[in-house]
Image (cartoon, rainbow, N blue to C red; front, side, top):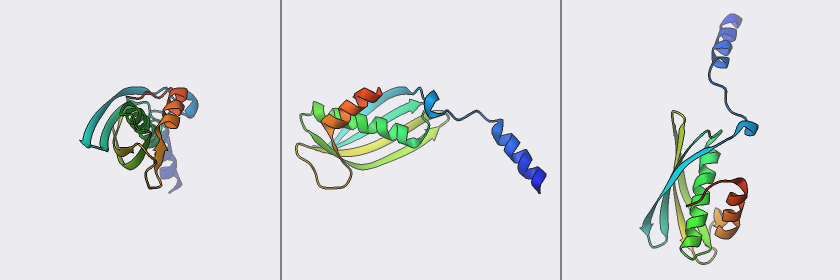
Amino acid sequence: MKPLAIISFATLTACEPVPTAEQFIPDYLGVETALLDKDLVQFKVAMTNAITSKDVENYAECAAAQYTLIRGWGFARHVRTNVIEEGRVWRADAVYTISPSLPRGLRTIDAEVVTAACTEKGIPTV
């Protein structure tokens, strides 16, 4: 039984290496926005070289924050994000509500603060 485990491990180590945080050089492929209702917005983003799904989720959040500011409002609330990885491309389909005042809910963002953090981290916005 032990040799099979060693063979399986050797097979896994022969795969393409997973990038570490130090090697994280993302390639942001763009943002598509769609106004679903007066305050409900969908963001579709894509990127390569992500380490985890959180990287593409952050990209969508940055797009939502900047879009909120463009509309002249200050806050957004996360509704949902679906993430898939196809080959080396990570895609997120996120929906946020945007509003001029702090909305109810646990997953709210201050658009100005989040946009500034995104700029500092080098994550593009809309």
